[in-house]
Length: 381
Ligand code: CUA
Image (spheres, rainbow, N blue to C red):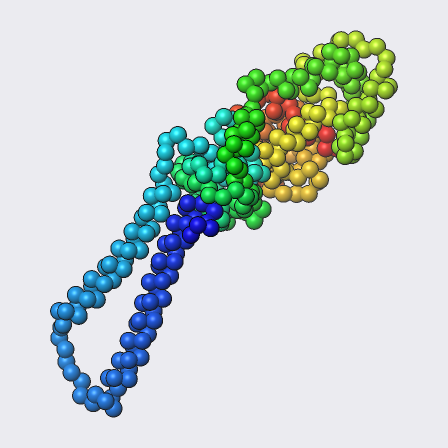
């Protein structure tokens, strides 16, 4: 089976064909024998019934042959199973985490992705398959992978992709409302190309740098400071234009800069640092937040357009009054930054009335990531 997409696929196909072949031979053989006996031993031909107590030779035949058949099936299955379950220790490892409702792919160097799982061709890859919530099943039809993702357990699966291309990934275990949308892709890349991508996409060591740069670097050249300073009083204005325009950032920026042409003191620029929130006009931060929402699959459960999914929508959330249940008692709180931050970090401390406590907590988000996510939520008026 040289046409299979992976080594595991050729093994699975082989087992399938062997078992199918045996089944066909057995079925045809049994049916033929039955027909033969019906004819040969009909009452017309054999009016007298013989009483046969046993026949050692026949008994051996019908014991030994099925044992051999079963062992052949076992052998093919075992060989294929061993290929899936064992591999070199230094194989590229990708942790595949099923979450309601998306797959998260985490590489050893810190790369995280949800939309595309990239692996090199011709190299063994080790998937560590687990789940953050309920049981999912990591299903890659082209590779014949269908492996359960179970919370609290790490299942190993080794595979060597044999041709480049892009293949489907699905979830094969019903896991709730959006189970059917738990789809993404696996891309098998030539080794050199993969290595280039792997090195280039690794998150930088100084993780806060990009967020800080976005906030403080523009301030240095004075032009960005105008955005900041202006973004504050003209906040609503800036955010209204930012998400509306497709090319939000240049449009929003020039708009904010024009009236902000007046001299800007460094003082207002310091405000965002003290109040954990970002200027609502900061389109880069909002865009970053939107990206993070996709990466952490927040958008699987929280819509940005007001429609109700598993969790409350983000649209109009910021600044609104929210009725939450704390230890079974209702309480009304204002959805400010502190509330949003707490709801992301420990979502089950206060549950919004009418929703289920289903969200996994995100205690490991960095302060910068939180800031970007909250900026994104703020931008959805
Ligand atoms: Cu995850 Cu179905």
